[in-house]
Length: 141
Image (cartoon, rainbow, N blue to C red; front, side, top):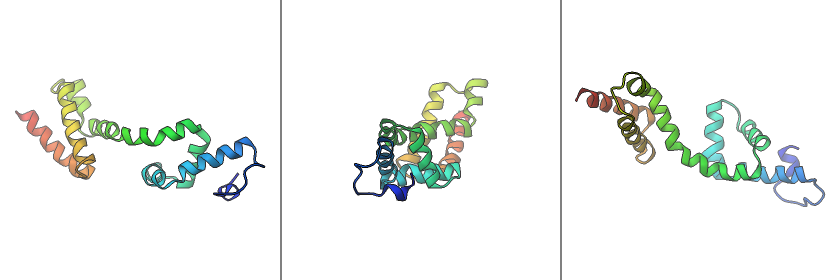
């Protein structure tokens, strides 16, 4: 069933349960906040169209998962940025391989940089540059 077939309003009494469920799911993924917060950035990251991502979500997630995805996505931003920082700053080498930084020290560094990105609006690239400088200063002490 295509988007055009399901419409935003109208009598759904003649539709079967699967069609009604699809309409309900589409209403979620087509909402403004979903488009802005989830659909646009993830489709861009995956290099697929927004329609393709919507279709993937509609097919693979049930209603409860769809309804819970937006808050989980929002709360995961901090975690995901920290994981990316861990990799980009090569903290796996500094902590896990060379043991020159403790896990606590690495967490402190990642939290500081992630906070600058998420709360102060600093670009990831600029935060990484500043973070590398801070990391080097920290290691030189």
